[in-house]
Structures are given as structure tokens and as C-alpha cells.
Amino acid sequence: MRTLTELINTEEPGIELIHEWIADAVRPVEILPLLSKEIAEEALLELQVTTRSPLGAIAYDTGGILIDNGWVRVLGGGMDIFPSICQWNKGKTMEAGVNTVGYYIVAYDLLGGYFCINGGGLGQDAGSIYYFAPDTLNFEALDINYTDLIIFFITGNLEQFYQDFRWNTWKEDTAELALDKALHIYPPLWTKEGKNIDSTSLAIVPAEDIYHINKDFRNGLNDIENKYK
Image 1 (cartoon, helix red, strand yellow):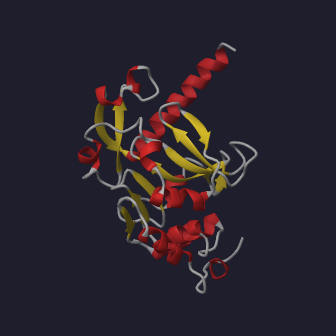
Image 2 (cartoon, rainbow, N blue to C red):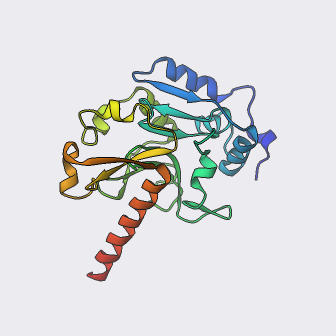
């Protein structure tokens, strides 16, 4: 385990690079203020990456980053009602300081999709980013790394990525959504009826609930599939 002294890079801080990317942003990007340096330090120690890297810089120097008015929330050092990357992963990918699933969540969207770094549990391409898609309940390889993901969020074609997930009034419906909330879609996106998102209903619920709802659905469907193999 490297110490904080070894992980904090003051000569080439990665946050400066992130600010350069944001200067070229093609959509709203907001860096959240950091609530507690102690919580950020905890996250950095858990990640074991230096602040020269974008992952370490976001965890240590920001409360998180909101992309496209909060449609995507990049986990950082946490603030107020928005958890740190370390806090978000506890009970999901981490138990008693041990990663139990082979991936680590680094960002999520308002519909329950989340982006994670493969730690070996999703395939042979450790270090690559996967997206848990709420319309399939499957992990999809994006064939990029964390740095590529942040650049994509800021300057990439996010509209195309989410073209099937956005309804006519999505900007108005998400504009004032609190940092600890997300949207529950009914019928679910993975059902036949849920494919036409404009005909579904929306409910504001805790973001944590969306994660657990989709996880339970995925586990239930896997149990049914295994039963009839």
C-alpha cells in the first residue's frame, strides 16, 4: 500500500489537465466542491492511484463532476449528499476493504446505468471501462480506459450514446434533480414496453435504490435463465 505522500503529486497535478479538457467542453460540465479532505484521502488510499492520473485527481481534488447538467455523475471525493467514490462502492463492489465483484464503479447516470473499471471480473481486459446498461441489464465493454471515458463525457458524442434513453422533456425533468436522486423508469427499460421511453412514466427515487433495483432484476433474470439451461 502506497502512502498519501507517495500518491499526492504536486509537480504534475492531474486536475490541471482536467481543467484543460473542460475548457473545450461541448456540454455543461460542473466540478463539485470537495466537502472533506479526509474523505478524499480515504478514496485515494483505496484507489492506490496518484493525483497525476485523472482518476486520482478527481477523487482527491473534486467533490465529483456533473456532466450535461447532471445526467452523468462522475464520482470523486464527495460532497454533502453526493457520496465519494469510496463511499459509493461500499456495499456494492467493496466489502471490508476487499473488492468482491471484480470491478469498481466510477460514474453513473440518472437512469441507473453505471460505468466501471474492470478489475478482472468482467473479462480479460483489466483496466478497461464497462457500462452496465439499464436497457439490457448487461455489462458492455466500451474498449476505452478511464482517461478516455472522462474525455468522452466532456467532448464526445454523448447524445449518440444516449439516443435511445432520452425523452422529449428530459432536460426539464432532470434540471432540478437533487444530487442524491435518480429516475426510475416504468415499465423498465429492459422490457418490451420500456423500449419506447416517451411512453414510460418517471419517478424520482434515491440513486442508491436504482442501483439495487437493477441489480435485483439482473440476478433474478440470471436465476431464471440458469434454471432452464
